Amino acid sequence: MASQDLKRENDKLRIAHGETGGKANYIWEFSENLYFPFKKEPPEWDHVANQATGLIEVKAVFEQKKMCPLLSRQWVLCRFIAPPSETHWKNTFGTKVEYPRTGYYAPTNVELDPEVAPWDTDANGASLTDMVIGMAARDRDRTVREWNEQGEEILARSERAKDAEMDRIIDDACYIPFVDNSPHIPGKRGGSVSFGGS
View 1: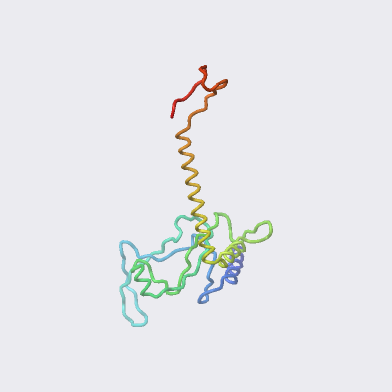
View 2 (view 1 turned 135 degrees about the horizontal axis):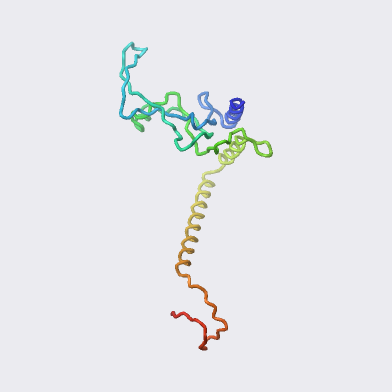
């Protein structure tokens, strides 16, 4: 049942966001299935027959490492990354990461809590995938100016929160406990307490 549900949700993403080279631009993937090949450290080597030339070649051994090591059994929205040029890839990563000839799916910052699935629905029957598609459509329609204004507002809110916290800290440091001076008549000696100051 879950595989049919996942296929249905991934088909929704394909319809909403299209595909590149026959691969959906976005899919849901389980965090435990997201791996990328990294060269073993310290390096290990293997002898591999090249079918085209008939020669035996020495190649580095790669091992699969988890892309999301901090996630545990969670669904992650992933974006398809088309393969860059091999030269660009090697200039960026050297030989530490195997070149993805057919592209790869990279995790986004959208991950669901454990025990929550993309096909779970709300009271209105909309799945989490439907909500993600709606949010992405709203974001896609924004102009650069709107993105900049939103970023500036987030920074301004952060600054206001920091200023309010600093004011609170200063007020706490300068706090003089209230002492009841009643019945106090200014300029008259009595049993009241007064604090000196300028």
